[in-house]
Every structure is written in structure tokens, then in C-alpha cells.
Length: 118
Image 1 (cartoon, rainbow, N blue to C red):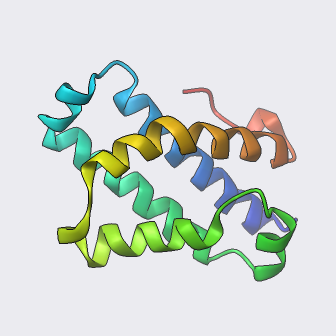
Image 2: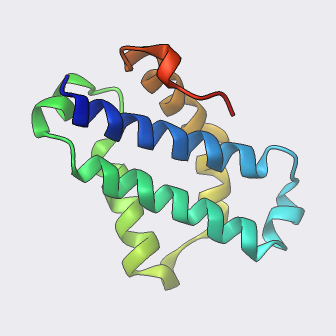
């Protein structure tokens, strides 16, 4: 894996961890009422999708456990079709999918010391 690719994967992992961390102490009702946290989480999802586009297709195939197409589509929806963003979908994604994706990335990254704890 090229150094550039490693840094991109690290960006994806950090964004996933930050999004999870932003809501870790919140209830659904608190999240629903906090537009600042919603914006922060949505931005992290955008970063994840945009970063995933920068990776070569071979790496997507190698890391088939990650939903590359979905990451791209999520980012496009968040950035370009923001009126279609379903905040319940975002909440579900943070709680059900991002932890799994983070786990995969933590295993894949070659030097776990590079991964900052959040």
C-alpha cells in the first residue's frame, strides 16, 4: 500500500472515529436538536466519501469489506443533495456502520501507532 493511500485510509478512520465520538454521549433526541453536531457528523461523512474517491480501484477491491460505493454516494448526497439527507439514516449509520468500518481500517492500517486514539 502506497504511503499516500495509507494517509487517505487514516483520514477515513479519523473521520469515522470523530463522528462516533461526537454523538457518543447523546441521545437521539439530543442529536435531533443539535444542528451543530449534525453538521459536524455530516461533514465527517463527506470527508470519508471524498477521501475514498482518491483511492485506486485496486485498493477498493483489496479492501472489499468496506462499502466504497456507498461511502461515495453518502458523500454526494450530503454535499450535493443536502435536502435529501435523512438525519435518522445518519444516526443509524454512526451507530451501526461506522464502528464496523473503523474496526476494518484499524486492522488494515500497517502501523497501528499511526492511529491516534479518540
